[in-house]
Length: 353
Picture 1 (cartoon, one colour):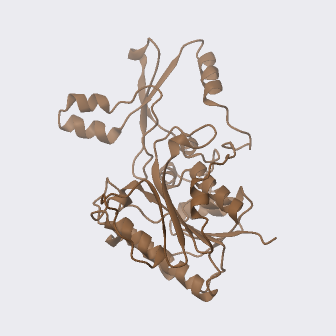
Picture 2: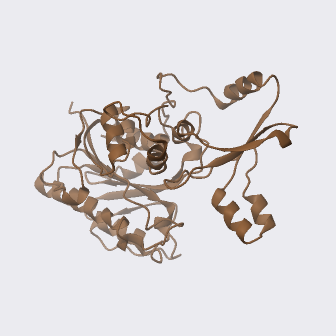
Picture 3: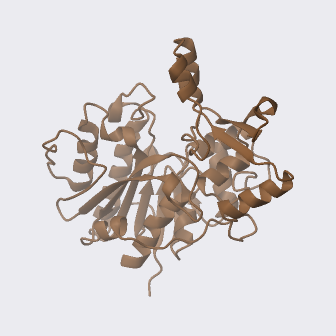
């Protein structure tokens, strides 16, 4: 049986290779330009060949692979950016990934890749007056795709084009993993099947996932057990943890919007806001009945790794055992993909191929 292979564009810290390797898919090459993420990926996957700058990669000259994944830059698509859309200097790199896929398929007479996976922010549904997502679909299918009658893209859907089957789905990281992740992180995942009509099966079929792993390879404690242990260590006191939205807090404070300011503080059990590459998330902590003794602190890089479903310590060291700075770790994790979401898709691909 032929071993399935994967190439990762805009690789970051190797989340797609990590998820793929858990299902017997071999990562072959990766493209990334950030120094720290490359070093982190090299440490965990020393056999991956690094291609460097995506704009200089020729898809017809690199080893063909069954699967190409890419989470292209989202800065120009995000709701918190300037929203230049796919014409922006960073998000326009999407077209280079499409070019590489086309070059590889041309060089292999349409054999490789069999599957492509694209990941991006929810803002891609609405940027450029909702035309950017239409462009994404047309780039994969090489077919004219009409706008929905509602003029709004659904959070899940499918289209068929010239010899390619496409499905997309909005996944929120807070509902994925074992235990589920405690982070609100909504991302579009699109699957393009160039070899059949299996995209919907990959993206919509229910399947079990592996448990989130710690650095020791042991399944993480369930949140209920972890809570009992925390309470016991606190000598019976009940810890209260409430994440809050710093951006909203700052803007409402500036506007003197008291109600909005109070709403920026979460409730017990609320998920953490989406981890971002350019900022650090904060939360409040106190013991029940001792609110005045509480404090505010930021998440540590280790806690951010846990919120992404990464193995603990994944971003601590580079391939030469050099320590990765906290700043570089926060940035790399904020740009990364939630592991359980990537794992779900890789499990589906392994299953259908």
